[in-house]
Each structure stands twice: as C-alpha cells, then as structure tokens.
Image (tube, rainbow, N blue to C red; front, side, top):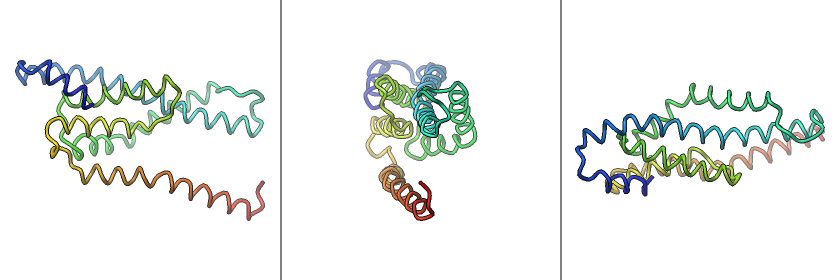
Length: 184
C-alpha cells in the first residue's frame, strides 16, 4: 500500500484532485474485485484443505482430493460471512485506522491483493485481514505518520498476537478434555 500510494502521488501530482478522485472511484471497483478474488483464493484453499483432510482421515474419501461440494461450500461460506459481517470490518478498516479516500482505498486494496496473489501462488496461507490492514496503515502513513490512528492499529495488532496462543490453548484444552473423556 505504501509503495503504490507513493507511486500514485508521484504520477498524479499535477492532476486536479477532483479528477483523480473521479478516476479512482471507478478504479476502486476493479481493485475491490481483484482483492475479493484473491481473498477467496487464499482463504478458501485453507478451509478446503482442512475439510478434505478431515474427510480423508475419517475414511470418507479413499484418496486425498477436494470434493466439488467442499469447494462450493467453502466459497459460499466466505461469501456469506463477508456479506453478514464484512461491513463492520470494512468500517473499522476504512475509517477507524485512517481515513480512506478512493485513491487510498484503491492503493490499499491493490497492494493487499498483490500480497495475497503472491502468497496464493506459492501456496502460503496468509491472513487476508493482516494483508489489508498492513496496506491501509501503509497508505495512511503516506499522508503523514499521525494520519494513522496507532491506538486502533495497536488493538488490532494485540488481537493478532494473542490469536495463535489462544487457539493453541483452546485446542490443547479440548484435546485434553476429550482424552480424559475416553475419546481416541
């Protein structure tokens, strides 16, 4: 986001702000679609892999592959989840971390989409939220360092830092309880 926003500033430095705003309002439709495509490609493959692994381990499929219904279910779940809860996240990302304009929204979405595209190409599972948040912080920092609400960004960072240990503890606790209950 930071590098792309810097390049956009340099390219459009002599263009009227209203004209730049008009162009990037349209271009943001493309960047949003590009980000959405890469969001689905990266997040859905994680879900599909877990479901297929469980199906294989439980003996429901004899060879490891992704059944078509799993593909449909994963993409449907991501779509429905985005529709149901995405607006709150979009509000937090687009107005509470830093104020986004069409040009900065375009830069953040495009930067995050390329990060996701690269990770997906190499089969690396990454957090879509981390990608877009990092891009938004980078875009906000191009205006001025104080344009980023670092308290909000810090709260998000703490949530990320605590997620992995919390997931580990919940998983270990569940495993221990199941073992004590006699599950294999």
